[in-house]
Image 1 (cartoon, rainbow, N blue to C red):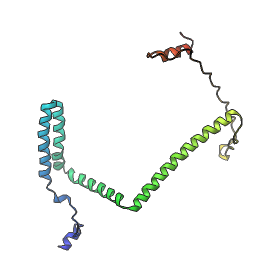
Image 2: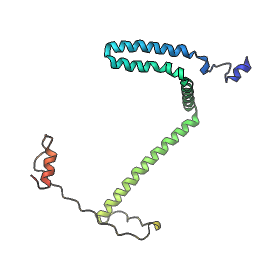
Image 3: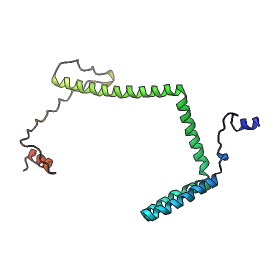
Length: 181
C-alpha cells in the first residue's frame, strides 16, 4: 500500500486529491440542471434575455466535461493554488516580493526626482542665474547646438467679470480673446 501511495505523490499523513478522484459527469450534470432551473426562474421574473443568458451559463459545465476541458482547468487551478501556497509560506519568496516593491518605489522616486530636477534647472536658467550651472554637454552629443530662446509668456488677461454658469461661457471667452464678439 505504501508503494501505491508514493506513486501518486501522497504521504500517509495527507491526502492530495487527484483529478480522477472526482466523479465529473454527475457533478457537471448537476450543475447544468441547477443552472437550467435558475435560468427558467430568471426568465419568468426578468424576461427572455435574462433566461437566455442564464441558459448559456448553465450549459458550460456539461460542455466543458464533454470536450475534455475540465482536466486542463483542473491543472491550471492546482498550479495557481500551488504557486500561491508557495508564495504565502516561503520566507524567501516574501524577501523577493519586498525587493520587487523596493525596486518599484526607487524607480518611481528617481523618475519624480529626475522630472523635478529638469524643471528646476529649466526655471533657474530662464531666470538667468541663481543655482547651479547647467550641465556640460556630453561628448556623444557632438558640437553644441545654440539653445533656442525661451518662448515669451503671454500676459494673463484679467477677467472683468466672474465666469457665467451657462455652457457657452468658455466659448465666449475664447471669442473675446480673439477679438470676435
